[in-house]
Length: 123
Length: 217
Image (tube, rainbow over all chains, first blue to last red; front, side, top):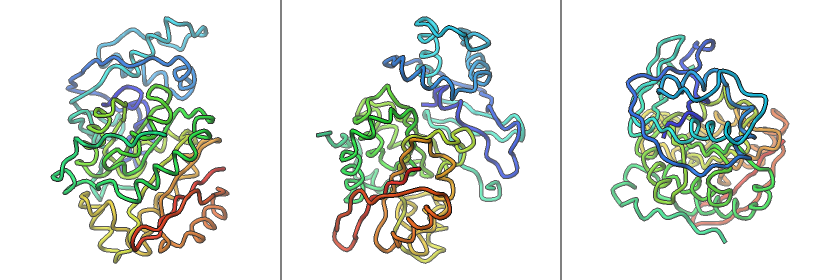
C-alpha cells in the first residue's frame, strides 16, 4: 500500500545523499483505487505535515490532476474530499521510485516499498 | 476490552520466517490497552512501529485509535514480515502501511518531531555481537530476537534517533528485558536526550523478565 501519504514521507537515505533526495519519482506503476473512510479532522491535522509540491507532483505522475497547485486558503469540504482521495485512496501496487539526486531505484512490489540498502550504501 | 487482532491467516510456515506473537508481544498490547485513554487524548496523527513482524501490535493500536484518525506506518527489514503486516492489516480491515526498511531510516528526515506514537519490540536477546550483525544483514527471523551485546545492539542504534522523531506530545513504547540494563537505558535517554521515562508494565515469562518502558519529553 504505497499511498501518496506515505510517499510524501519517504526520502532517499543512501550514504551521502542528503540534498534534493525528495520526492522520489514514480515509474512503471500499477495503481489500484480503494475507498477509505474519510476523516476531516485527520486531514486538517495532517495538512501542515504535507510537502505540497511533492504531493501535487506525485499525483500528476500517477495521472491525477485534481489537486490545486497551491494549498487553498479556504479548506472546504470539497477540497478535503479531493485531498482524501489523493492521499489515501490511490494505492501503488507495483513500480519503482527513483531518487532525483543519486538516481537510486527503490522497487515497489505487492504494494510494499523496498527501502532497504546494500551495506555499502548505508550512511 | 480491545480484542487481540485476528492473526489466524498466518500459518506455521509463515512463522518459519516471521516472529510469532508471544509473551513479549502480549505485554506490549497490555501496556497499550492500559494507556488507551492517554493515547486517544493526544489525538495522534502518526504512529510508527519499528520491526512490525506479524503486524499484530499495529493492528491492535489501530483498534484503540480507530482506522481513519491516524497514519499507521510499519517498518521491518524482513520481506516476509512486511508481507505478514500487510496481510494482518487486510485480515483486520485496518490500513497498515508496511515499508521494507531498517529502523526508521527512509522516514526520519520527513518525520522530524512528527511521530506521536512510536513502538518498538526490538531484538533484545543477548547474543555474541556477530550473531546480531549477521541476523540484521540476513533480514530473516533471527533478526527479530538476536540483540548482540547486552541484547542492546539494535536498540541502542535506534535510541539515538528517538528524540528526533518524537513529537511534542509523542510517546515511545519500548519492550526490554532485565538483561538489557533498564536503569541504564532510562538514565542514558534522560541524560543524552532529555527524555523522561516510566516503566508502564513488567511481567515474568519463563526465564525472561519483560518490561515495557514509555519515553516522552
